[in-house]
View 1 (cartoon, protein in one colour):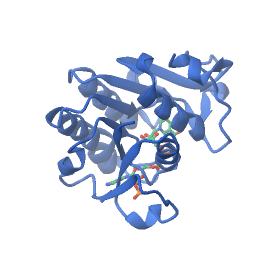
View 2 (cartoon, helix red, strand yellow; view 1 turned 120 degrees about the vertical axis):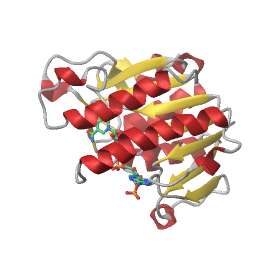
View 3 (cartoon, helix red, strand yellow; view 1 turned 90 degrees about the vertical axis):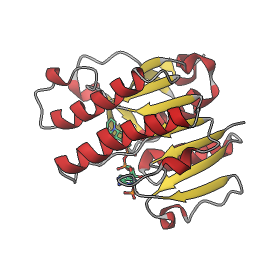
Length: 211
Ligand SMILES: NC(=O)c1ccc[n+]([C@@H]2O[C@H](COP(=O)([O-])OP(=O)(O)OC[C@H]3O[C@@H](n4cnc5c(N)ncnc54)[C@H](OP(=O)(O)O)[C@@H]3O)[C@@H](O)[C@H]2O)c1
């Protein structure tokens, strides 16, 4: 069992991933802006590190074996936070992970981050930020898993996915719970190493993607 830092642990994916990692027996350090958001957690294996990602959060990486970055500025903030969180905080997390000799970095990226120019959409700046953060991880020398989910839903997880992008726009989605499960499998399974994995609801068992 490992020591895992979850950055964005108070988020919708982050909370579910934290719970799944704790249930699987890992020790989790949850990096959050406010510890109140995790008041419903009750586990001796959970440590809370309160920090804003716009400040220096390097100390959170000490003693960590894996890092999960599932923070995000969200759709209700402007381009400033897209730059500071989705790009710069993610980039800083990669740098801090390298300095702390972290063994594995799991990035929650996004569908479309591979080629922002293909997106004729208002979210293109966000996709550029995600792209640059992913590139920084890819070039870091760290063992990486980059998860690129489609549009996130709050449906219960199905644990069935496909990695390739569905043809129709309306099929390019996946429940947050399945992304959280994919984070757990990324931590636990060897086959997650140095891979970029698309996540859309489909007909392949999620676990098989990682075995
Ligand atoms: N929405 C989509 O359809 C979609 C699709 C593909 C990928 N994604 C990616 O999926 C990931 C997570 O999605 P989600 O639905 O779980 O997002 P979410 O619920 O909005 O969670 C975002 C997390 O980031 C944290 N955060 C934001 N700014 C911060 C700061 N300055 N300092 C510390 N923490 C900060 C939030 O903390 P607080 O709780 O304090 O706000 C929260 O824990 C994101 O990386 C997003 O880009 C989203």
